Length: 278
Image (cartoon, rainbow, N blue to C red; front, side, top):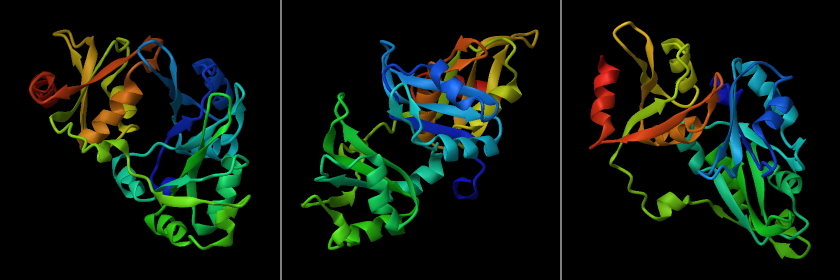
């Protein structure tokens, strides 16, 4: 289990452009009951190469991670890891490494073998061109900062030299940090619409809770207590809310495609807060 925390949500990366939701469902559904499944896409519908699978039971998610990681779908090996919730994501940021000067022979499996001696690894990824050729660099996500630092300190390890090339290791700094990400005007609230009328508050809250720590979730109802087809969820942090929008937007739930957006402090957030407190 993911660091003792009950988690039912899996991140699925390295998806082929030809991979569909149906392809993923066919691969993951034999493991257990799937609550929701989504491939993240551009507004044009083009796949971004990753998605999320949410099981109803954490044991099934753990089984899928163990059995299906690196399995082939639509010609590519799946890269599966636990969906990182807010606190865990913060702890893992300093455990994420970028590795450069990789020989062309290094693939995900070999990269895992090279770095596994330094500690427990959650995921590895060699960056590739559309034709599958290595770009000469990749990423290693350790479970702890200690393990990552251990790998950085092992610059003289003979195993860091492959085919005459010395692998260069450094902490990965996200682009948002490099650019002094300043989306501080965002609130913690997310607006979700196009909900199927039969979706209950309990189901809505259960879905949102899989995406991060929430303080409240509510579907807006009319005077007859019938769903208006939209709702609001308040997360404990704006970072968690931003990630939730990415996962909820265009997610298919009960036959309908959801649309999600984050509320800014000077716009829908006032309305969001009024609904959440009612």
